[in-house]
Every structure is written in C-alpha cells, then in structure tokens.
Image (cartoon, rainbow, N blue to C red):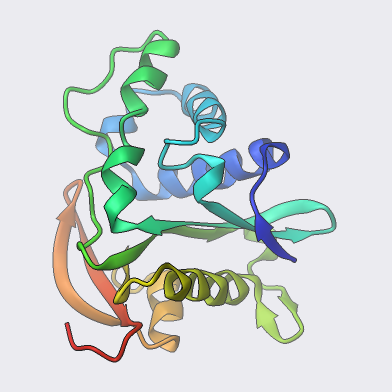
Length: 196
C-alpha cells in the first residue's frame, strides 16, 4: 500500500535512507560513524524542513512496515530543505562540514525525485504484477503531475537499477553531472508536452 510517511515510520525509513546514503558515499558524511548517521537521520526524519524528513516522503507499506520510500519535492522548496544539516551535526556534537552536505540539484521548473529505494529483501517481490519500486515511481510521477511542474527530474548513476527503472517510464538524460566527485546523469520526464 502506498501512503504518506508518518512519524511511526521513523525507524524503517531512517534505515532505508541510511543504506541509500551509504551507497552514494557522500564525502561530507564520511566523518560520521554508521551509528551517528543513523541517529542523525532518525532525528532529522522528525523535522519538517529536512531533506529526508517525513513530510517529503511517501512509503510503500507491506504487512504494516515501510519497505520502500520515495522522497520528492518541487524545486522551489529544495533550498529550504538543507538548512537542518548543521543543526543536526551540532546536536550530535560533531563538527559540521564547512560545505553543504547535499547541493541543490533540481532545475527551476522541476518536481525533483531525490531518492527512491526499497529494502533489499523486497526488491524482487511484486504486488499485482508491479515491483515495489514501480509502485513508488508511478506514485512519484503522479505527485509530480499534481504539483503543476513542467517536468520531473532526478539524478542517477549510470547503469543503476534506478536508471533502468526511469528509462522504462520515459525519462531522458539531459545533463551529465559530477556530484560529490561521482558521475551522475540528470534525467527528466516531460509532464506538460513541452520540450526542455
């Protein structure tokens, strides 16, 4: 079942985000131990203006547990979602990084899908013929259309599962980016029939 994330999902969603951020290997988070990062994400999850806070999340629930999560938002609010990192580092009594942890990525006319991840043991499972990741992607596209944005954007690593899934939905690579010294492609899905 797809639904908005709630406070009750904090443990499950924080772990999903933790695993995804570990895969992304963000340099500015390397100074944190796994326990510290887990704590930071758990506390941040409760903050409405945090990039990985519950208001930006939709979850796929299976047997009462959030087994997948998609984070997305309009480009206009992205700059407001990164102001919590410093406060969260200070709360853990860790010196915050001098540069922002995550740089803004959305183009001005986009609804941006920041993260879509499914717990490992559920990645090969389906419900009514759709993979859990497909349910989350379809829901994200629906949310993007409802927002009134011209396009939906996302950044993916070349050859990743998310890149393959995005291709199935018609996303097109429009830019090659270096994010935290790693190569990503910025993908867009036209929501309005306009060219970008």
